[in-house]
Length: 140
Image 1 (cartoon, rainbow, N blue to C red):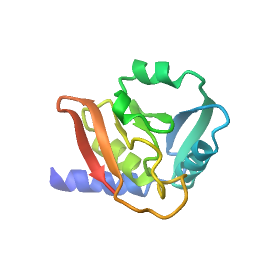
Image 2 (tube, rainbow, N blue to C red):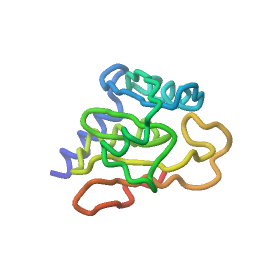
Image 3 (cartoon, rainbow, N blue to C red):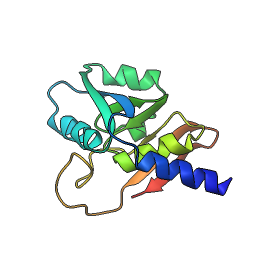
Image 4 (tube, rainbow, N blue to C red):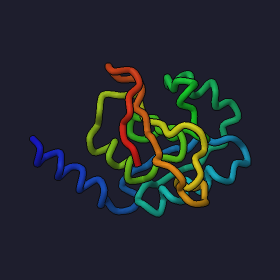
């Protein structure tokens, strides 16, 4: 079983461009959201950006906890990804397919994909909507 998971993760992390498709819901006019979308595109995730003036309603419909809200919301292959989560972590999520609604990097951390500046602290990515409620999914 371990070798299957390792193979699936390796395959997901090296998947060619366009193999994953996603919709990025953003506040109208937000520039860092487009920078994050470009990071995802450069790493093999085909992203369509949609201006969504009522992100709060959309997040509530997808079960995103208020304390885990990030800059924008991504829908990909049955999951919700909140905020500036790296393409590598998103591909890990898609390879492992945990029983959660999604993952989140709350806020807008400096140095995260699309935010610019130097990374000053580890990025904590949380999972939500699973049997364990909220949990740390990964620390980048």
